[in-house]
Length: 332
Image 1 (cartoon, rainbow, N blue to C red):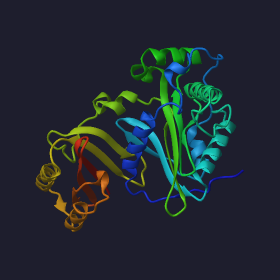
Image 2 (image 1 turned 60 degrees about the horizontal axis):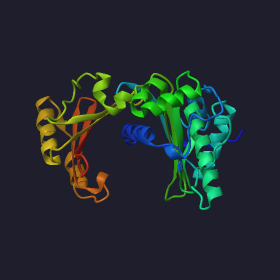
Image 3 (image 1 turned 120 degrees about the vertical axis):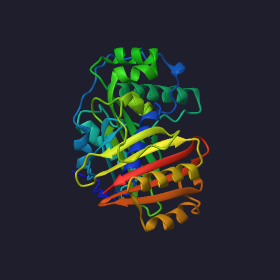
């Protein structure tokens, strides 16, 4: 059986990648070219939910190592690696695996392109509607497919018949997501400048709380007793590894304070709690304030603390859409 022979890459900033992948997967829309007005999605061939096999088996079979994380109280699995296979080859490989596992009824290798003529537009709409139905049943469909980038995924529905799922979704999509879906799958593949393809996968098979991803307060997370939250900072996501060989955690906040104010709070608060600035703090702060391609293409601030065998790094970057993004990483 052909595999991707993926090589696990370094776990640099993996926790941040988990959060980014989850938010991207949950906000990615339905297949391209499908508009609500194009068809009544209740006019469909009756079908039931396809449960299929565990997503973890499929990802692990491809050569990636699934790792468990907790994000806003949700347990999710994440895997990342590189392969010599092209992005379209990655799409074809996983589609074949999902069919073999019984998750998909067929391979979906492209997205609706809209078409130019009336017949082409109708064919595109029909394809989009078919893929939308498949996604609602729990199949994995492509969101985007090109030579340099592909993404695929879909929610995992609860045990309801397809017409019931769609009717409830049409009534109130945001509020019904928690009632009709119990998890999600997402895989993307992007060609890098060195010719290799970076593959990222994130999934949650059951008991996923969609409301907690929208608002961490819904997860009733307790306070971080080791590192305080900066004043006027709103928690966006709290991530921690559940793997014994990588004990680290990441908290991300947004605030309308400037980066200097946020970073100065942590300098005083952490030193007051017995932490010491590391030798790398000054050098990394210099880099963060001057490298033009740092996150959000803006100048930032950086601090690194140590106590015994533990380390905490704090970064603050200006984001025009959200004031300042503050990330607090804990590791051993």
